[in-house]
Image 1 (cartoon, one colour):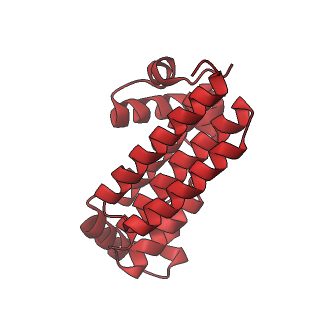
Image 2 (cartoon, rainbow, N blue to C red):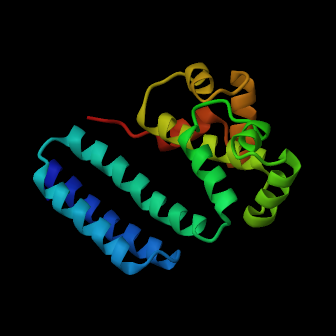
Length: 185
Protein backbone atom coordinates (compact mmCIF):
# COMPACT_ATOMS: atom_id res chain seq x y z
CA UNK A 1 0.00 0.00 0.00
CA UNK A 2 1.14 3.54 -0.67
CA UNK A 3 -0.30 4.56 2.69
CA UNK A 4 2.32 3.82 5.37
CA UNK A 5 -0.25 3.19 8.10
CA UNK A 6 -2.28 0.79 5.93
CA UNK A 7 0.93 -0.99 4.99
CA UNK A 8 1.92 -1.37 8.64
CA UNK A 9 -1.57 -2.61 9.52
CA UNK A 10 -1.36 -5.23 6.75
CA UNK A 11 2.04 -6.29 8.05
CA UNK A 12 0.68 -6.61 11.59
CA UNK A 13 -2.23 -8.73 10.41
CA UNK A 14 0.21 -11.04 8.60
CA UNK A 15 2.39 -11.30 11.71
CA UNK A 16 -0.66 -12.01 13.83
CA UNK A 17 -1.58 -14.89 11.52
CA UNK A 18 1.96 -16.28 11.69
CA UNK A 19 2.03 -15.94 15.49
CA UNK A 20 -1.27 -17.83 15.70
CA UNK A 21 0.13 -20.70 13.66
CA UNK A 22 3.32 -20.73 15.71
CA UNK A 23 1.55 -20.93 19.07
CA UNK A 24 -0.74 -23.67 17.80
CA UNK A 25 2.36 -25.59 16.68
CA UNK A 26 3.73 -25.06 20.22
CA UNK A 27 0.68 -26.81 21.67
CA UNK A 28 -1.67 -23.93 22.47
CA UNK A 29 -5.30 -24.89 21.80
CA UNK A 30 -6.39 -23.35 18.49
CA UNK A 31 -9.44 -21.74 20.12
CA UNK A 32 -7.18 -19.65 22.36
CA UNK A 33 -4.87 -18.70 19.50
CA UNK A 34 -7.73 -17.69 17.18
CA UNK A 35 -9.51 -15.71 19.87
CA UNK A 36 -6.37 -13.71 20.58
CA UNK A 37 -5.70 -13.30 16.85
CA UNK A 38 -9.22 -12.03 16.16
CA UNK A 39 -8.98 -9.57 19.03
CA UNK A 40 -5.73 -8.09 17.75
CA UNK A 41 -6.83 -7.95 14.10
CA UNK A 42 -9.99 -6.11 15.11
CA UNK A 43 -7.99 -3.72 17.29
CA UNK A 44 -5.49 -3.04 14.49
CA UNK A 45 -8.32 -1.77 12.31
CA UNK A 46 -9.47 0.72 14.95
CA UNK A 47 -6.08 2.47 15.28
CA UNK A 48 -4.94 5.29 13.01
CA UNK A 49 -1.64 6.51 14.51
CA UNK A 50 1.67 4.77 13.90
CA UNK A 51 2.76 5.08 17.56
CA UNK A 52 -0.40 3.31 18.70
CA UNK A 53 0.21 0.58 16.15
CA UNK A 54 3.81 0.14 17.34
CA UNK A 55 2.60 -0.20 20.93
CA UNK A 56 -0.07 -2.70 19.89
CA UNK A 57 2.48 -4.66 17.86
CA UNK A 58 4.69 -5.06 20.93
CA UNK A 59 1.73 -6.01 23.12
CA UNK A 60 0.62 -8.56 20.53
CA UNK A 61 4.01 -10.28 20.52
CA UNK A 62 4.05 -10.41 24.30
CA UNK A 63 0.54 -11.88 24.50
CA UNK A 64 1.31 -14.65 22.03
CA UNK A 65 4.46 -15.45 24.00
CA UNK A 66 2.39 -15.56 27.19
CA UNK A 67 0.09 -18.12 25.55
CA UNK A 68 3.04 -20.40 24.88
CA UNK A 69 4.44 -19.87 28.38
CA UNK A 70 1.06 -20.66 29.91
CA UNK A 71 0.89 -23.86 27.88
CA UNK A 72 4.39 -24.85 29.04
CA UNK A 73 3.60 -24.03 32.65
CA UNK A 74 0.53 -26.21 32.54
CA UNK A 75 2.94 -29.12 32.24
CA UNK A 76 4.66 -28.35 35.55
CA UNK A 77 3.84 -29.21 39.15
CA UNK A 78 1.95 -26.60 41.18
CA UNK A 79 5.16 -25.63 43.02
CA UNK A 80 7.22 -25.06 39.87
CA UNK A 81 4.29 -23.30 38.19
CA UNK A 82 4.02 -20.93 41.17
CA UNK A 83 7.77 -20.27 41.11
CA UNK A 84 7.67 -19.53 37.36
CA UNK A 85 4.83 -17.07 37.92
CA UNK A 86 6.73 -15.41 40.77
CA UNK A 87 9.77 -15.03 38.55
CA UNK A 88 7.68 -13.51 35.76
CA UNK A 89 5.98 -11.13 38.19
CA UNK A 90 9.27 -10.02 39.76
CA UNK A 91 11.53 -10.07 36.69
CA UNK A 92 12.74 -6.51 37.25
CA UNK A 93 13.59 -7.26 40.89
CA UNK A 94 16.51 -9.05 42.47
CA UNK A 95 15.34 -12.67 42.60
CA UNK A 96 17.17 -15.34 44.59
CA UNK A 97 16.38 -19.05 44.69
CA UNK A 98 16.56 -18.97 48.49
CA UNK A 99 13.92 -16.21 48.61
CA UNK A 100 11.65 -18.23 46.33
CA UNK A 101 12.09 -21.26 48.58
CA UNK A 102 11.17 -19.14 51.61
CA UNK A 103 8.15 -17.75 49.79
CA UNK A 104 6.82 -21.25 49.15
CA UNK A 105 7.96 -22.70 52.49
CA UNK A 106 10.21 -25.38 50.98
CA UNK A 107 13.83 -26.31 51.38
CA UNK A 108 16.02 -24.47 48.82
CA UNK A 109 17.69 -27.74 47.75
CA UNK A 110 14.32 -29.39 47.22
CA UNK A 111 13.05 -26.45 45.18
CA UNK A 112 16.21 -26.41 43.06
CA UNK A 113 15.93 -30.15 42.43
CA UNK A 114 12.26 -29.95 41.41
CA UNK A 115 12.84 -26.92 39.22
CA UNK A 116 15.81 -28.45 37.42
CA UNK A 117 14.01 -31.78 36.94
CA UNK A 118 10.91 -30.17 35.45
CA UNK A 119 12.37 -27.28 33.42
CA UNK A 120 15.76 -28.68 32.54
CA UNK A 121 17.64 -25.71 33.94
CA UNK A 122 18.64 -24.24 37.26
CA UNK A 123 16.56 -21.48 38.83
CA UNK A 124 19.42 -19.02 38.44
CA UNK A 125 19.92 -19.83 34.76
CA UNK A 126 16.19 -19.54 34.15
CA UNK A 127 16.01 -16.16 35.90
CA UNK A 128 18.99 -14.81 33.95
CA UNK A 129 17.53 -16.09 30.68
CA UNK A 130 14.19 -14.42 31.40
CA UNK A 131 15.90 -11.16 32.35
CA UNK A 132 17.87 -11.20 29.10
CA UNK A 133 14.69 -11.86 27.10
CA UNK A 134 13.06 -8.84 28.74
CA UNK A 135 16.12 -6.62 28.19
CA UNK A 136 15.88 -7.35 24.46
CA UNK A 137 12.64 -5.35 24.35
CA UNK A 138 14.36 -2.41 26.02
CA UNK A 139 17.22 -2.59 23.53
CA UNK A 140 14.86 -2.77 20.54
CA UNK A 141 12.15 -0.33 21.56
CA UNK A 142 13.78 2.25 23.85
CA UNK A 143 16.80 4.49 23.95
CA UNK A 144 17.60 3.49 27.56
CA UNK A 145 21.31 3.31 28.30
CA UNK A 146 22.97 0.01 29.09
CA UNK A 147 23.72 1.04 32.69
CA UNK A 148 20.07 1.98 33.26
CA UNK A 149 18.84 -1.31 31.75
CA UNK A 150 21.33 -3.25 33.87
CA UNK A 151 20.21 -1.39 36.97
CA UNK A 152 16.49 -1.76 36.20
CA UNK A 153 16.85 -5.55 35.96
CA UNK A 154 19.11 -5.72 39.03
CA UNK A 155 22.28 -6.96 37.37
CA UNK A 156 25.20 -6.37 39.70
CA UNK A 157 26.92 -4.17 37.09
CA UNK A 158 26.82 -3.16 33.45
CA UNK A 159 29.65 -5.62 32.71
CA UNK A 160 27.71 -8.46 34.40
CA UNK A 161 24.70 -7.56 32.24
CA UNK A 162 26.82 -7.42 29.07
CA UNK A 163 28.62 -10.71 29.75
CA UNK A 164 25.37 -12.50 30.65
CA UNK A 165 23.67 -11.07 27.56
CA UNK A 166 26.51 -12.27 25.35
CA UNK A 167 26.52 -15.71 26.98
CA UNK A 168 22.78 -16.12 26.34
CA UNK A 169 22.49 -14.50 22.89
CA UNK A 170 25.98 -14.73 21.42
CA UNK A 171 26.01 -10.94 20.96
CA UNK A 172 26.79 -7.94 23.10
CA UNK A 173 23.85 -5.71 24.01
CA UNK A 174 25.17 -3.01 21.66
CA UNK A 175 25.50 -5.45 18.76
CA UNK A 176 21.97 -6.67 19.40
CA UNK A 177 20.62 -3.09 19.57
CA UNK A 178 22.33 -2.12 16.30
CA UNK A 179 20.85 -5.14 14.52
CA UNK A 180 17.35 -5.11 16.01
CA UNK A 181 16.58 -1.51 17.00
CA UNK A 182 13.10 -0.45 15.91
CA UNK A 183 13.32 3.12 14.66
CA UNK A 184 10.09 5.01 15.17
CA UNK A 185 9.24 7.60 12.53
